Image 1 (tube, one colour):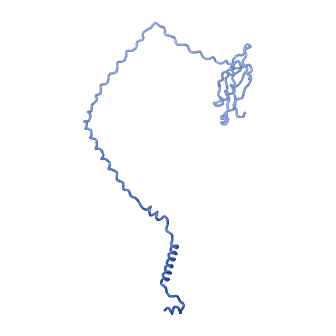
Image 2 (image 1 turned 90 degrees about the vertical axis):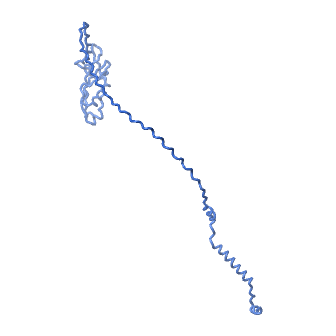
Image 3 (image 1 turned 60 degrees about the horizontal axis):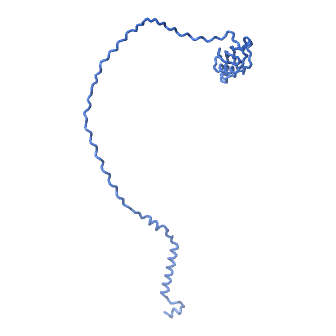
Length: 219
């Protein structure tokens, strides 16, 4: 056999070399498999630890105490006796008083008080001066409400003119039929000034009758 191997130029078979090659191939294959296989998740061990559940047994609470016994029933009392009320007889009405007797007296009966004197009537010739002239007369303003409602009319004022020519008292002698027109005339007459009436060379008070006309054509 040795001569045949030498003649052919081949090395003799060695089991040691074969085993060394097999082990080397196996190591390389294992290393290759480690490279190919996916790595294990790092938190797998922690997850396994988290799955451990600790169970603590809690003792049940003691049972509640039994309810107290119901209170004893009060003793039954007999029903109250019904007392019938007796209505007393109606009392008779008191006797009527005797009629009053008017006795004659010698004292005189006082006379009733006299009636208050009537206010003096204004003179028939109502005038503030000979010509009824004005120192100043302001035309009254037409009320806006009366203008919107087309109210017209004439107000006659009775004015008591003082010594200084100012109106001391103003009254509506004849109304226009509309309150707002009468009020506007009075407000304007308070600002008027008259010539006082002259008697015996002196100024005296007197009445004046003044008509105030409200006409929409004057606007």
